[in-house]
Length: 585
Ligand code: PNW
Image (cartoon, rainbow, N blue to C red; front, side):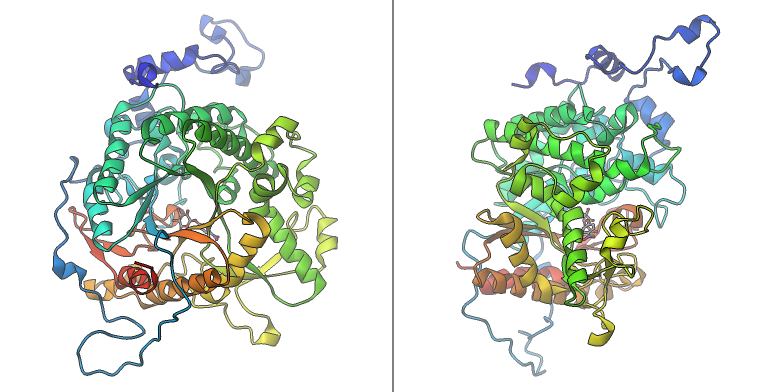
């Protein structure tokens, strides 16, 4: 089905092929400036430069680092000495003579036999091989290479975990601990170096082999189409997600992926966390083509494009793969009213409305924005047409949520309504204040143990997970299954540890996974239909603007050793243990 269009033509040829596509250059006037004619408004004219992939790297990104290993590594079996679990936090199987109170198993809890538990990673964060095999640059190559001060520790993900070459070993290592599912992301600009047009067969072959390797190891492959690494060409051509031009391009890309992998992949996520990547707009000035759209409008223009892109990609996917589960990944912590005042309740509701509800209300409830968002956006967003609303409504087969944490919400000092009436209020338009602590009357304690200070949004708030899952089920999922599509923890100050054995012993992350799994079991025993969960992350990786300085891995990767060796941390065994104990055999 894809064969005819799927070869990179030689990159300059590919760009010319793109130019012929209708509309690609519609905003660029003819190059009359080159004939020497005097012009009235020089800024209205555009260059006729044609950049191939190499030019884009050279001119827009600059030199890129390459790993010591640049060929696919064969997997070596995980030695049994690496599979000995640590003495766990709550009881110990070690015959040391130490005494441990037993943790009783709750016999009324269980994970059903077909419950899938897995681990997740994402293309830009783990792959490395930035320029290999024709990959085009993404906006994150600009953010990490060019934008002064953007990355906390000045690192790039040029090499990162070198998963592009080491995936066989990576899959073997997760399979060795009994993990049932591996969730990874396709790099859009690997598959389509310009985000549209020619498809790179080498990239298709690469992801095909990841999928085959999963199947060989009896691990379910789960694929996300977009996890923030937008092809740079799309950002600089029309503003990326700011423009509805992206809808057709995203759907075309999704079709290529479904056609190539849909025979073996049943679990698909379209976009990861649109609340996060839409709020990344405006991108830093001076590094991307300028589209002069008011800053405050940009996240919502992005959101509009996401709803159209996701819903159309969903419908196309269901037509091509009727048995697939397709959804998108939402995110955000549970929102706890800090007091029982009615104004705090209102603030909590507006926080749901402007975050999860921004996408979930249209997709799961009505086909359109909720009233609070609509009141805000209607002056600058066009309304959805009736047929768009129909396409959006019901465009998900599960409710997938990246459910890491919880925090408290309360009304602004002036009250919620005064904020809504004052467009210059710093909390406008959401008009909800947040805190990580209980109220002063309740002692002012933190909601739970803090993660690394570089991930200040994250606390261990597993006590709130049952309420959280009930809320998602009652509000949006209803009869649809819930997938906890990411959860995990950045062990505080892990990057300042130096001894290997110290790094591998991660007690707060271990207690996070221990308590998280039991809280999930509790909610499931109360009737919440969670069908699977994906821990973030399979190993330490590039934590976006935090670089390598905050660590979410359940495996340590020694980034200073060119061989990039991986080691299981104690938390990985803690996660696996929950299923040894509670999953029906
Ligand atoms: C996720 N929150 O982002 C991303 O999908 C991953 O790429 C990232 O590495 C991981 O979490 C750890 O940060 C989130 O505020 C960003 O609730 C923000 C939130 C949750 C997840």
